[in-house]
Image (cartoon, rainbow, N blue to C red; front, side):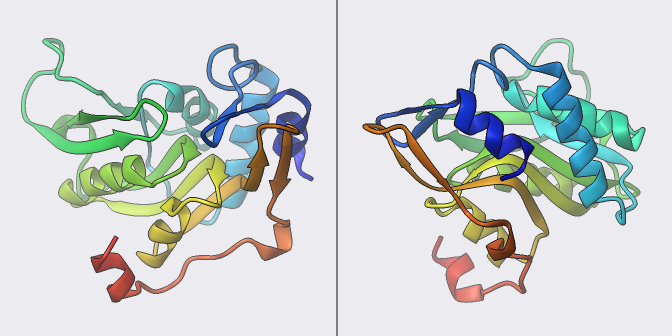
Amino acid sequence: MNFLEERIVKDGVVKPGNVLKVDSFLNHQMDISLLNEIGREFHRRFADCPITKVLTIEASGIAIAYPVASEFGVPLVFAKKSKSINIDGEMYVAEVESFTHKNKNQVVVSRRFLGPEDHVLIIDDFLANGCALQGLISIVEAAGATVEGLGIAIEKGFQIGGRVIRNLGYRLESLAIVDAMDDETGTITFRPQDERPGPRQPDRNQVETR
């Protein structure tokens, strides 16, 4: 197991409904040393990419994306879940559905912060159904920018999100892929590192029916 998988086993809590609580170290109380290690690991994995911006979504994605942007030495942009009076000018807008909160939100990014010259690394804490990532991808594409890759802290491999994103042909790196969880025993099964899927060419049939 890698460092994140070990921490999930130690402090993660499995709840009914395929919910994995990591709020003691990742998205409520935050272990800064762990977050910095996550930043270094994503920098290592995407070191071959000409990253100019890191993009995430509020709120829990910010903590993961901050050390990544710091490692690359580039700005961090986060999509806001509602239009604020402090956001002026035109915006890129996407609708995303939250697996955890069971609701839909429009997220916005000011057009001042993404443009055709940007090479973007998208970062988030969890991947379940893939809706948040697809929303962020649509914002990058609306800006005419390039999606260089997507980095996820924890992917729920038993849900469709990872398969959908990879079938679209994007490079997706997940530090921990959970293949199964048992809320009665608390058991978490991770996908072995040597069985992690890489990017593939788009499967048009699967993409069109998602």
